[in-house]
Length: 487
Image 1 (cartoon, one colour):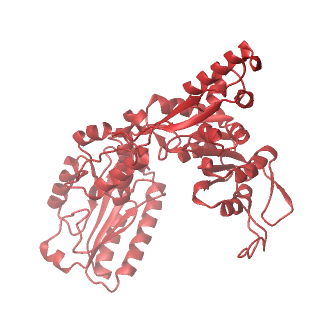
Image 2: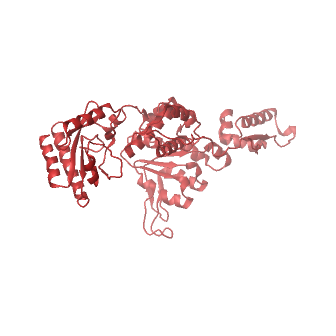
Image 3: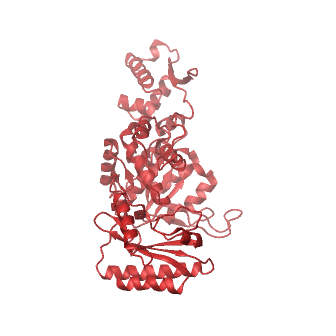
């Protein structure tokens, strides 16, 4: 490091720079100590290094980009410096020396600039020196450490699969299913409430498949009108409609060879579902305004937050499409069903925010327990927003909850009672005893399953089509009666 000491002295002599300092990382305890500093005495250097040793964590570990600190901003490193020098400083340049992206800085360069005019030029020079120093240190065998290992050494964040964190048994079982089915190209249906992480599961399926290097393309079906959605998925030819100035590929073509994720598939129209069904069955479609048949090889993963079986009973979702999608079904548990994962998720979100802001905000044990006991009707999305809000309101490096969230449903869903009307009066000669018994059994099955015909059919051991035939044959009428609003 003798040559580096000469570089620091030359910077001081030829540029309006003071207090140039090089901090080196201790590879054992992962902290940065002053190594070279021409203007700092040995006594001051030792005191500062002892102070760093006593700290629970070195904030410099999260430094991934250069920083320019002006006099009115907090001193990031708080290096020894006289008051008279501080009065002449216009900016402090802090530059991490990083060999590869995502790694801990090998060391850190810091210097104070006393004139504002050449500040941009000085920043460029410091970056150049940092790059050359990184290459030199690696060539001399200086060990490289990953920032993730050091930054999270105090709090281990368990991952279930891919980017999904947690440790609950329900999520582990879900991960086991994903590992088993990822190699297949079978269609997957992901069911769960809004905010439970269905898209993350879809990406995990893709990332663990044999086609992980192929495209993963997603589209939210509920965010687009039917015409726009059709154009978005199938593409269009030039002149297909007003404004179609050129031919455009759709999401099916863009995902060819990979995975297409259709979010909120339950919110699409019956006519659109018919078009989706054809692509799933035949792997073919035509662009809007075109006649050429396009063949694609795409694995389709769908997600919905509505009960498709109820939608089938209401006539708003095609039964044949449901069976075509429901080859592999993943039911994602709500956060209320995996409260043991709440502390892990909180720490995960907090770590991300700390890394982005180069801070070390923490959460008190009392708040952690209180948050774990809430009912998160907004699921993981609600939890993340609560942590982010508390992070912005932090006090004394601790998350600050002005009022702990009173998590509750945004609207109380009204319970629905199903009443099965008795069959239309018929002459005893028109029905055999067997038919009368069958009518009674169908009525009981429908009542037991809230009027959901697909569930009643499963209970009776017959197909949905057979059940509907008998309902029509025997004149069984199913009426929905909503109960009065309850407090």
